[in-house]
Structures are given as structure tokens and as C-alpha cells.
Image 1: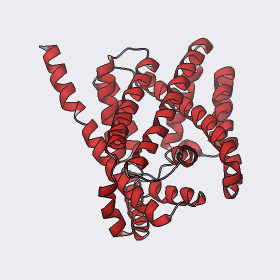
Image 2: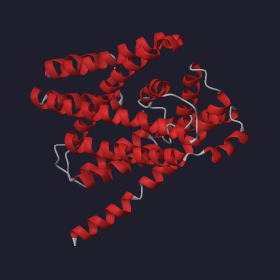
Image 3: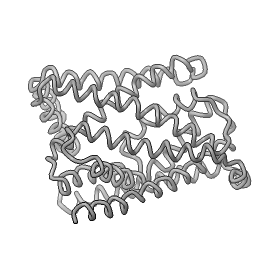
Length: 330
């Protein structure tokens, strides 16, 4: 494959993702009563609105704190927070992959942190997230089991796949280089080594296998603790966002639906913070709980607008950080 073709392939894929997102959001809009969407302005609950914004701020602070501890506190917390704000902005306004790339680049270029260390912190964060997703999914599914009969197979499959991924991670920790060598053999046999993200993942596993067991387990424990708190606050934030528009819903459907939303966020099909994908998936999953589709579609569009506005408010930290950093340097 020529260099021109290699460059055009990601561009084409990004264009397809944008078209896909626009198509899905158009589908959600087609389910929306415009009059009902406009009247949502009169249903806004100011206390819930403030609570939702504060909870989103808390999520940003928590994610930065998680990275801060997982990189061994080698970078000051305000600087880590600055990187997380940039990463979130790029992920939510452009694409998740671009956000991850900015996270690694900013730690390497601005803070002088080794790519391997920053990538290892990111991997441990994702492992913590997967464990918390598995626990939340198990608890929510048990509680909602009679109501979600149509998804029993999906739930069991998801729990099995996530559980296998977690076991694979701990196998890499225990068997170290032997496990990585076996996995590398399979990757070569399946000719997956031609894929860039597969090579990066294998490099991360090799870096992980070089670490001591005590260090990895301590870091995993830290990552899981932060991820569980982060997931709980995420559910509270989503619930507050729905309550902002006076949507009558209980906590259990919110937790059940948005655990699946967390899984979908791992798929490389999202742009603009999951625009279209999240709304369409939520419309289907909440429909299982018999919520009215027209009202739900309007609320989902409204919460999407609120999500973008909240992200813009969070971006105010960047000039404040720049001002603080410049004064500190002087």
C-alpha cells in the first residue's frame, strides 16, 4: 500500500463516521416533536441543572486525579488537569482517538513524561474502567432482569467478553513475557500485526509484563477504586441531566442503559462525543423500559446540547491555567 493510500484510508474512515453520526442524529430528530423540544425550556429545573454541571466538573477532577496517581505523581495535579481538559475537549468535539493521541503527546512534549509511562497509566485506567463496568452491569442486570428479557443474551455475552478481557489482563500480569510471547504468536499468525493499533497494544502489554507484580496490583487497585467512584458520579450526572428537563425516570434504568453506553464508547465509530450513536442507542434501550419515544427523543437532544455547553464551560480552565502557570514562572 502506498503512503498516499495509507493517509487517505483514515480520512475516508473519519468521513464515514461523520456521515454515520449525522444520519443517526437525523433519525433521532425524526422521532422528535419540535414543539415538545421547544417547550422543554419551560421545564428546566435550575437545581438539577446546577447539580449536573457540578457533577460534570467533578468527573473531570476525578479523571485527572486518577491519572495523577497512576503516573506516580510525577506531574503536578494542575498540569494533569490541564491535559485532561484538553483530552476531553478533543474527544467530545472531534473524536476519541484524537483525544487519546493528545493525552499522550501533551504528557510527552509538555511534561517530559515517557510515552510508555503515560500509556501504561492510560491502560491501567481502562482496566479499572472495565472492572467497574462489569460490576455495575452485573448489579444493574440482576435488579432489572425481569424488565429486560429482550437483552438477556446480550447481557450474558457482554459480561462474558468483559470478564475474559479482565482475565486476559491478569494473565499478562502473572505469566508476564510468556503470555505476551504466546499472544504475539497468535497476532502474527492472524496477520494482525499489520494494524497499527494492534502493535501499540502489544507494546503496552510488553511494558506491563516488565513491571513487578506488587507495582501492577497496587496500580490496578488504585485504578479500580477511582473508576468505581467515577462510574457512580457518571450515573449521578446522567440522572441529573435527565432530571434537568423534568424527565420522569428512576435511577435503575439510567444505570442499566448507560452501562451499555460506556461499552459502546469503546467502539471506534464515534465522533463529536458520540453524537448520534449515543442518542440512537439510548432511544432503543430506554424504549425497553416503555418510556415514550417522542418525549425521550426531545430530552436526548436537549441533554446533548447541555453536554456541549458544559464542555465549553469546562474549557475556561485552560486560560485560567495559562494565567496561573505564567505567574508561577515569573
